[in-house]
Length: 376
Image 1 (cartoon, rainbow, N blue to C red):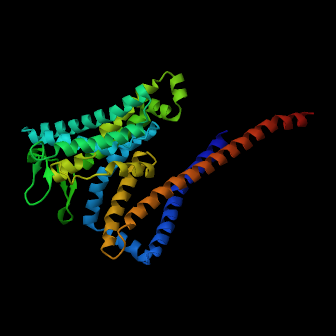
Image 2: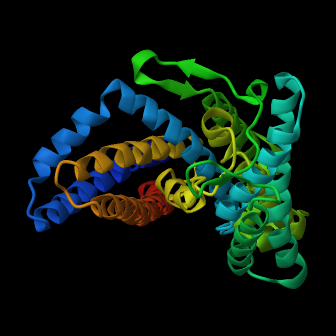
Image 3: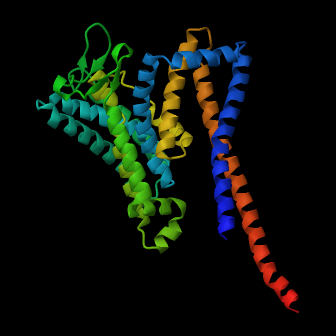
């Protein structure tokens, strides 16, 4: 039996390496064909992307973008682990950032008090907004997909209503930009000086802490075990005494709380106010990054860095004469290739494991018969 386990573990390791390699090769091949279809040289494009992406200022840009994308990926992944599709992350983080910005602009407190209050406010708003979808699902059976889509629209309308001059917004001079009252300088989050390359947002530290907490809670606690069990089989979880409805509502709340952090790097490290040009769509990017990372904290981090790299380098390609739609095509191709590659490898691995277990059991069943014949 130990021999069988050793074989399965070795094969599982090889399959684990094969999946990302297959995804990378497939993505490169398809991307090469796409670029060739535009009449451009794909190898020159790849070389330019690597050279430009390796520059120090690009590395700072990628790290800052990855901080936001990582938080979005974790927020989505929490729902995925429960077999929930929380596509309301986009509305949750924008509403949370808006209300946190209003609070931060009104505070006149030392930074060590104001900053935690702003962060907790954002997490609370995100959690409450996600809780609406969770409660609707467990009490009325409303699909979280439908509920979160509508909540995204409602959040957008609320922000648009209040972010107007004379309400909570202030019209900036020389344009149509409307923003909340700027945060006092004491409420700015710390940054890491990168010299001429720029500054790395200090909120990357918070992102790392969130990733560690995500790994520990889901992989090393009873709560995490119950959450994963409900995601895999609600009937089995209920039979073991787990309250499925409570876990569904709780996971949506936690996902919303993490979603509330998504806008904090931009608010506390960059813009220091919420305006009508605040980043949008990051919640949907988080879905792709969670899929790329297979809901694993390290995988999500790699996916976030890859997404930041692609955004930085493909935007640069536009200035080199390449079509601007290349970014969307490359991102879509990578996500598709990763999902397909992992599913193909998973099915192959499951089939191989079943074959090996069947062969081993057949050999064990045949052994007593052979021994009996020898004895005769």
